[in-house]
Amino acid sequence: MGPGPQPMQLKNNAYRLNETLKGVETMTRFALAVLALASGVYTYLGVRGILDGSATFVFFAAIIYSAAVSVAIYAFWSFMLRFVPLVTSGVQRVGLFVTMAIGCVMIMAMSSWLNAAALAGSAALEQHMAVTLQGYAEDLDTAHANALSAQSLLPDVQRAAERFTGLAASERESGALTGTTGSGSVVQLLSQMGNQMTQLATTITGSRDEVAALFEQGSARLATMRELVSTPGTIEPRSDQFQSEAVQLTALIAALEQTGVAASVKRASADLSAGFIAPVADGTSADLASRQDQVMETVRASVAAQSAALTQAADEILATPPVEQRRFVPLSSAEAVIRYWSDFIPSWAGAISIDLLPVVLVLVLMIVNDAMRRDAGTLEEAENITAAEMLRAMALYRRMQETGVLPDAVVLPATAEPEPPAEHPPLEHPLAPAAQNSADDATVTSIEAAQRKRSDGPLRP
Image (cartoon, rainbow, N blue to C red):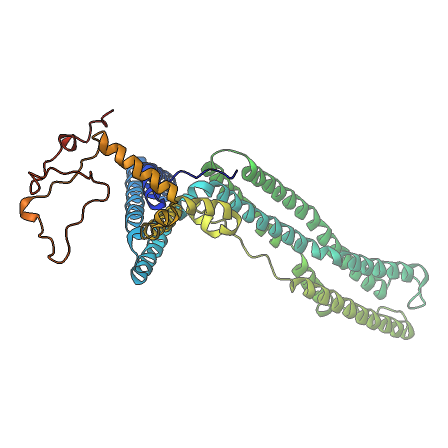
């Protein structure tokens, strides 16, 4: 046997949708109020972080602004929830959508970015400090490298000093250059060049200790700044102390830039050639004096070559661009969130969702109202009813009349009683009783059961 007949659907889909909407109306208002309140709270936190002035002024100004934002959000979305689902014309609905889009942009402009500042303001400030710290670390390393670049000239200068000193010793002991031993003009000249090179090497070596000390101090400042970035706690005092450390570090970087000896080496190497003073040959014979002059001319050429090489090396070092002075710029939490927005996309998404979540409710109501209008214009239940369901309905109707739940006829006012057409006799209700009183055909007597109040229950047989 097949399944028995299904019970008739007494309420259509449009009616059920309407009843459901009435059931969730209170919840919709409550949700909208909570979202508006949440947006106002986070707006208050964001505004408080960017206002300046006394504590009282900041408090009341932030409260007033956040209250205005909450009221504006609640009022705007209340209008959208009321009107958008009821509008059916395409042009009017597009106009409402454009209006809603403009309102969403205004809400984000007055609230969402402040909500994001409240949600991620401290993290954004820490991000700003971390980025600035990385820049300072790079500047310190660059300044240190520039200061030590002159140290690369030290081996050349030391070799030149050793060569001149060695030639002077050889000339003095064995006469390796002039063929005559003893201390003469050549030995004096070579010793003079050796001493100058040794002094230049000492200058380069002496700067190394100063550079190392400055770099150590800068590294200590960087370590303190790293602790300020990573230490938990309130961000404002940490930011102030970070700024103080940044000023000290900037001074150390500038001092490192000044300790470079490349310029000094360049000037000293230029003096080797330009300030070369050869002594007068003091040989006892003309032949020895001639040989001394030849050796001193060779020394002059060697000094000029050494001077040119050192000058060129110093120029290459000086061509390195100096470290530009960096300055730490304090930011408010809102400015930091906007500057580093790509690092806080989840916070931005949460801040915007608080303000624009009612868009989903508007769309749901619009779709449901469209479905109600579509279902209300159809007779789906009447088209799907079976003969058995119709017979059961007629039997139920007769029983209700017999028990007095329904009246036998409906009383019409005398002034509104229409005259039946002449060509068509009046039709009787198909379910009305067959027998009528012949004496009172023109008078319809109302049944007392039909006058019962709506609150009274049905009569029992």
